[in-house]
Length: 469
Image (tube, rainbow, N blue to C red; front, side):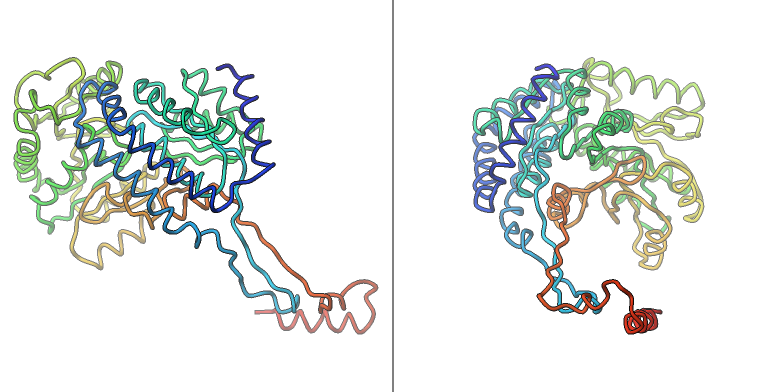
């Protein structure tokens, strides 16, 4: 599909929206249908994801993509009527007897650009929010995972009218054309580099954007926290999808005295999670050769600059050209490439900083991360860390799972993104919070119209004294 055809599709969607914005009943019917379609195509989606990665456990796709998506649909359907309610607010006293309220209204036709690492979830989860908010939508899954993109396209286009919900697929050129269209909102998930391009392309149309990006999400372990438990939870979060997760812990900060114990428990954990990892069909492959080569380049650069690489799985060669076994990296420095860019793979650097204040200072000296993980049982220190850092989200004493909380917003800050989604926050993202004031036939404000007589001047002076703090 070329840009002209894309634009024609958008125009048809916007015209259909203006004619009849989706009602509460239409939204509920669509969400239910999406749930049914997802269930009907579950096995095809799982197989397609497996094909894209070369190897990915069925259970991982179910647990990390299909189940959360179905639960998100359930949550939206349960709460949608309440989300759509008109909400009255106290009115300004000098505008009495007016009433004031706001209500959420759909934006129109929105564009959603998915990401390859969780193609099903990251393409369809924003769609759930867009449907709940009453929008029409065009999807563009990532071309890096073509098999799952093709299944999503077929299941969407077969079951929904194109003037309501439609899916298009294509290469990076199509993605550029897509992001330059005059959508009423664009939602993008991907890298910071591409996010900047999307925002640049959307700017001439003044199209608002939500950017769900990534970055280097740190994990800080306080010396008092049980190292075995920290290692277990860190490696679990790191190795979902072989580290190809935007909120995977990117590096660990802890005192040097914890290194040997952390290394031992990390090895034990990985060998328990993935026994015989080179033959284990539950350990995900790297998405393609380019990403595999990039990860190896990061490891070679770190080794050349004095790092110590610790193999956490079987001490054998990687099982094929698309696999990298889990590794810890010690003796890291800021000159190493793996400390300068998001790793997005099963490689976990360990940065030794001796106290919490210096650890927080290090995090704050770098771009704001999408996620921050802190392991500590002392409430006072936890609260201090929360006051003195800024990140998209935080999980205390675990990793990743804050994004599964439907009543919490998910989104980055600064270099890790802008805007939020999930639950009510996703509904708001795809809505206009529209302000309404309803004035009565007789109003106090009528007394303040020109000309400004002596009486009106006195009234204005009285207002000034009342409103002064």
